[in-house]
Length: 487
Ligand code: BG6
Image (tube, rainbow, N blue to C red; front, top):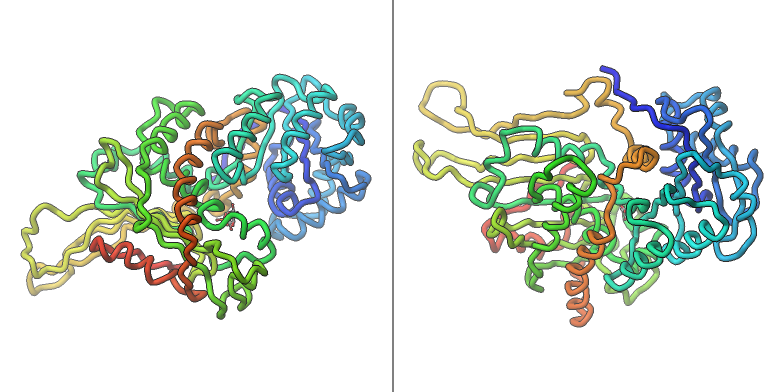
């Protein structure tokens, strides 16, 4: 099976922060992959921009080395890289000053799809937006792409929204949450809304609880300064886990259309119950044999007094007719035993077991693996073969997307590729709307304010564990168990 490539119109894409880490790791390698898939039309231009002085040739060499490093050998060859390079240009600009803007204005064409990717610190968003306007570069149809973190609380998110709104309409603003670009995350919507099978069971009457786990083996490494000001709650829960929760819990949008989808997600966020302090466990990794060096969290961030969490687990309730009474357990952390992200929908027991109490019975679980080995498993009970009565056995109906989809499944595109192309196409479905981000912060803020007021140390946990013991208790006390974190 060959994957379908939808053509796009020629575009001018300006990447501010072109020399930064995200550009090197994700944006340019992603654009290259789209190029070899035939989605960068002939006259399109990718214009790198940063403060560093560089000419086009130096920039092309910079991007080529990023491709060498981050694109698999099967997808790269010198000839394709050279052809891709002919789309690359560079203009040095000063976000806070006037230098370079005239040159940029001379490069970006009117009457072409224009997108400006702000891969820079949020403190520069306002400056870039203002100068794009002042120099007549952006028009009413230009799009801007902004990266997380979108604020660090409700007040700062509102301020960012206000700043961007001075120059751009909401329909021009693409706020990235790269989890929405992951194929399996989009598959959540396909599974829920393109099959009749699950919907009748998708509610508090039939679902006992839901577990959302995003476990990482890496520590905070070189990002200590940023991370120590954020912690797992701001870095992962307010955005990525929140998005997963919304897609699992939302009502069917009337259409797969940007505002219809985002309206439904927003309703879920509004319905989230406040989280009681007893329903949260925060952790911090100790020193030990982690995959990412042996240092403890406080050594990694070089802040011996740090009370920032590198792990958080919480029990979340949704106060609406569909979900009242079904807890959603969320957990995420660094330096855990495996890199595994999974959503598990755990169904209730059968109302009466006709096979008697002694027959081991396990609940049905629909598990959606986001990474690695993207796929879906439904555990079902069957009869164990052989004579000797009716013995029950739990077996998985297992589907690996890569196997099920053949060749096209083997090439699951990176989240950024998909999202950048959506910007070029002008499709905002997989981007967060301003009100959605603010609602997510409005729910997160009191949780963080409460623990800051109590000033408690996060619970220590060992690298390669499943997080602190107390996180296990969060489920044990409800008579439930976390699913194993398995790579
Ligand atoms: C980022 C966080 O948004 O997501 C990182 O800032 C985290 O701390 C990363 O490691 C996880 O993304 P992925 O795609 O590797 O699951």
